[in-house]
Image 1 (cartoon, rainbow, N blue to C red):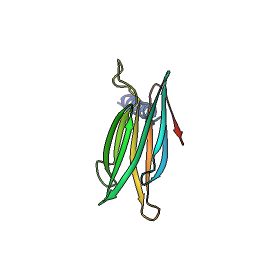
Image 2 (cartoon, rainbow, N blue to C red; image 1 turned 180 degrees about the vertical axis):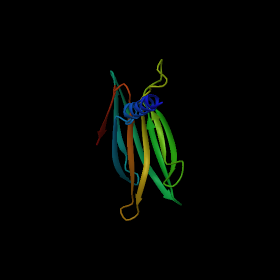
Image 3 (cartoon, one colour; image 1 turned 45 degrees about the vertical axis):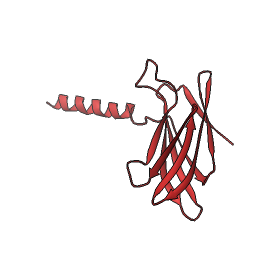
Image 4 (tube, helix red, strand yellow; image 1 turned 90 degrees about the horizontal axis):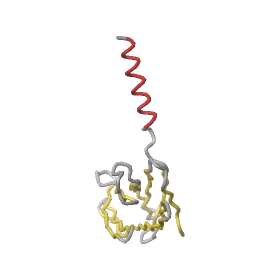
Amino acid sequence: MRFLARFFLCIVVCWHVLHANQYAENMQISLQKDEQKKILVKYGATEKLFTMRWTLYHNGGLVLLRSYDKVVAQNVLYLQHKNQSFRVQLKPSGASVSNVPYLLVQFKAFDFEKKEALFELFLSDKEMITTIKFLE
């Protein structure tokens, strides 16, 4: 019985160590109204541009416009709600549907004095084939 408990504990610890950090990178950015952030995404010989900016903060909702790979979208993000983040798939899924790299953008705070929104970006890439670079 004692051996089985130790074995189970060892498996649980190893599982958590292997899956502890699912994000390759995480960064924080702050944006003022209509300030556009451009991020160059590279994988293999492919380069794509991800852009984002916010246009309105009203009643706790931040209206964010984004574009990636010629797809334009709008999100309304809230601090105290399920709609606090969105996910952008960085490359087509192809054969490995479960290991597709993605960028997770999470709305973290709003500074009323500076009129700035704070975001945290997480890059998930288990195969480590994707790099991102902030452009001016």
